[in-house]
Image (spheres, rainbow, N blue to C red):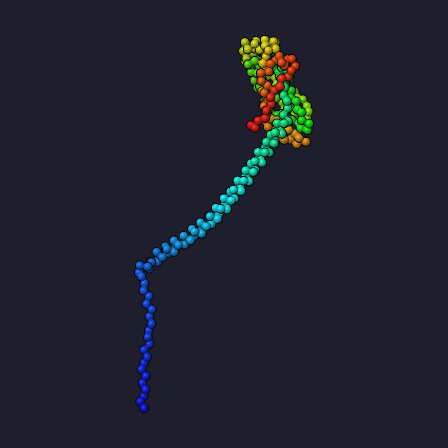
Length: 238
């Protein structure tokens, strides 16, 4: 028998060929740059979406905050107007009650009595920090400080404004004219009083406002006849 001889089987080797395009292959540095750029763009897009959401929320918050502030300011204005109106309704009536002119030791003395009538039933008035100035027929007697006054409800209070001036200060001629007009009851008097007025309601002090009393062009003859001309009183915010 012939020995059967087996031929060796040739094994095929498989190899994978991958073709690369050198133009599409980026160096490591450029690939990192490209990755960084794409990452930055992604972050920017995320941040832009967040900013749009936050922007809508912020605009809504700003709207409601502005509405709340407007309402608060409106309420404060209403409360301030009511508070101011309360004080204005409790202002006293002022009249110039008396005028005295006297000469002594080469000094012209001028005294004015102001009558303040308070018609409130439950409130007390406090006049403080009062400074008064008086002028008679063009002659100014300077500025004097008045004592504080506390006025009970439904009461009349007298404030005296007394000032003196040397004849040398006003001049001999002005002093003679002042004396002659006072004797003829022909003086024209101007009185100004500035101070602060507060109110006490049921034992509690309410901080008030500055006030100003003005008596302009008051004729002495009218005062001497007992008419007590009225003066104006006004509140101020400063």
